[in-house]
Length: 422
Ligand SMILES: *Cc1c(COP(=O)(O)O)cnc(C)c1O
Figure 1 (tube, helix red, strand yellow):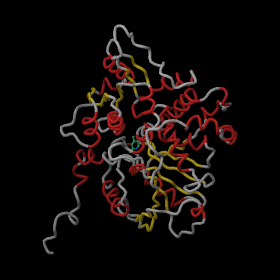
Figure 2 (figure 1 turned 45 degrees about the horizontal axis):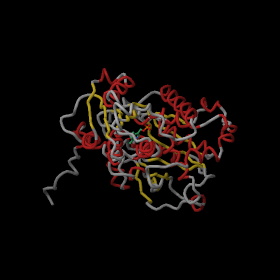
Figure 3 (figure 1 turned 180 degrees about the horizontal axis):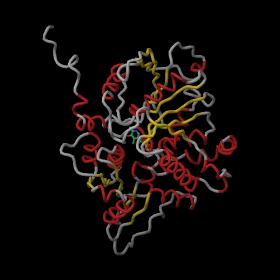
Figure 4 (figure 1 turned 120 degrees about the vertical axis):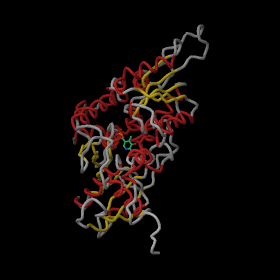
């Protein structure tokens, strides 16, 4: 790893990766510090009290801290946009300008019924006058809510039976062809990147040109974005966040950090780890596995990294090819593993406690898992390492959950209604 880090601390590479047009005006995020005040040994509910320091002392002052309570930092990407989920905005940060540069007219992508990714694509494309076509797994729900509602309002939603959805590539390709029509063209997001790296330009010649006689200037240019934006282009926006956080007035480049994130496809986690590696930071990424087993995550990590190297580096970068086999992310189980999408009794109350104590909303599917790991790591960790949780967002997911798990959201007797004896 030492050699890799050394090779990768390559200013030219970093500037080639990150000096580009972005969708987000600035990479900034608010940072909060969460104090862990007490611990009773009474099970899952309310066993810890949190307090939010909304304007923590960062930069030089951070190192000199002398605190009597364990704490961790939260990077508030959940506040980036009201409808576009935090890490989805990061994953689209480099992608959206690329769509504009290539005069893309339509985007095709897919996701689960409450996919934050499809909602993010729908909103972001609409802002740019690009049509989005969203293939959602399963049947249309009776009541539309949460990310599903956002996808429906901003994009063209088609529900796909699970059996067809299982073969994603084929499904996406076929739908993209039908959107393009006989005179349009289809390209996959990663192919735009790889082609432009090969040509040493971000030119517009990546699409096969439509016949100008048969179809004068009206042909559709369709781009296919993978499920969850699991494309190597998505890593760039996350790396940009790492660069932002490593500034001296924030976490700096010398402070040892454990960065905790919840993982769906694992793309965000890999982007964080690659960012730290490329910038030569002593930061470690801990990703909580939510949707898959460890072998699947390790395979995705390797595929993403090799795709990344193909897309963004040339032989001139003299990168060690063994980086492909480097284990950049620490994949960990959540405290109580379960089938993805399920929530357990008591977890809604846990989210409620955190919300009431800190003003930060976490959800039981994704961000509660990262919050729990961040809490454990800061209680058990060593003094020299700070713990930083990336709050990936997911707020609107709560609406879908409140519909699906009605009984879990009912308040306890104690809290509900007016008390008759007052
Ligand atoms: C999509 C999403 C994730 C998963 O991100 P990956 O990059 O696919 O791992 C995590 N948390 C929230 C809140 C999300 O919406």
